[in-house]
Image 1: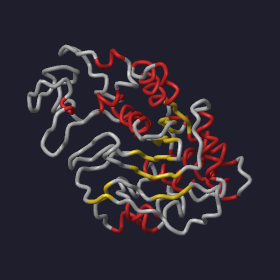
Image 2: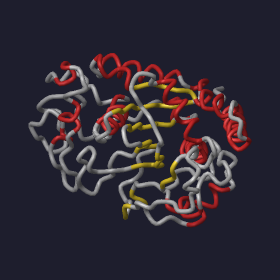
Image 3: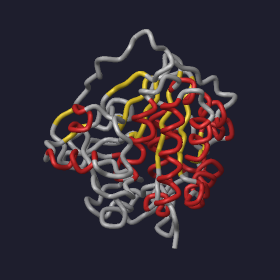
Length: 323
């Protein structure tokens, strides 16, 4: 899912009312916290009739608040993700299903609910992303009193492309980590994101990554070098740092993708684990398949959960086919 455009106008932090407080098995609901722009109402209407949208995954107010990228496309990663995790919040055993998924991939990190799920979550304070440009957007942010998990969802097109690259290269940056790499303003910074540029404040990604990243990640490079965060590591770096910097004692980052189109994502995550993360933190990043979630949903004793599992399985089978 995209991090969105730079023309978003307001920060919406709205809780969804109407949840049965006595039902401890359903995931707590929360509207997107990302900045949203004023949306034409027909975009939400297009989502509602999109065959990849699971009915009632969102309330009316939630659907109108989200900035939809490809509202009518059955291949939309955003719509598929919201169908899965937006619906999970309403299931009678949603908490258990999410916990099973997280424990399967992070058995030794102490991640425990109950979980509050926020779709398209933004918080400028976590990574010090000041200024008017768009901050990091987490597809699904899972938060409990003791844990934080960033979930990055891929479906078909974005799964084949992999994780997002740094937008500074090649127009504003020459692609290496060292003085002289800033081709826009000519600063002496190793990374131009570390200095203010117009309405964008200085970013602290490198500083925040010090406790978690290998020492050679920070070695100064010559012009022939390749910045470790120039390519697919960039989106992974921001998701990992967002989870690690959220203030929770236990944290993790989980990418989730249909198995048939998972090869690129799996390979990129493996590179990040081995070449960026310190050994103590490699277990904090994992790649799940949507089929894993489908399996847990189908095994539920509750019919709504089983129905969601069948819906996701049908969408994967119909849409995620590579010629």
